[in-house]
Image (cartoon, rainbow, N blue to C red; front, side, top):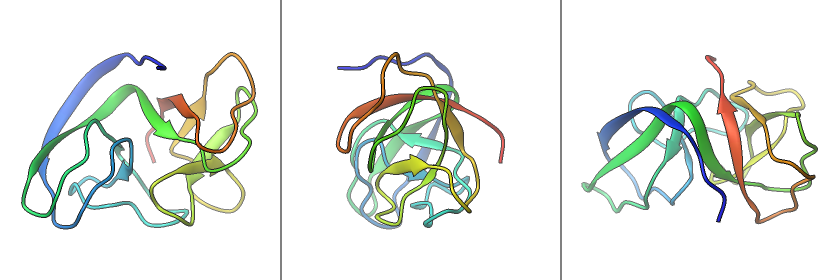
Length: 113
């Protein structure tokens, strides 16, 4: 499993089901496709559950397709994954050592967005 460097985490209450490593907003809600995200859920959560998210440092996400090393990433249309940035908001940069494939858990350096 890929590791990450969590500088800052935050606790949220899930308003809807959240998948592990899903991009989340500053309110703890699931991020929207190509939209802003403050970080990544560390664990899965059901509605009403408390969960922690990595919001500063490097965070783990699930790749929604092929992502090259160093590429900017955005929230995928599935909203539980990230993909190479096209027209959306860049939420981070993939810092893995090789090209990621769909379904891979990847390490992303979070950037303010």
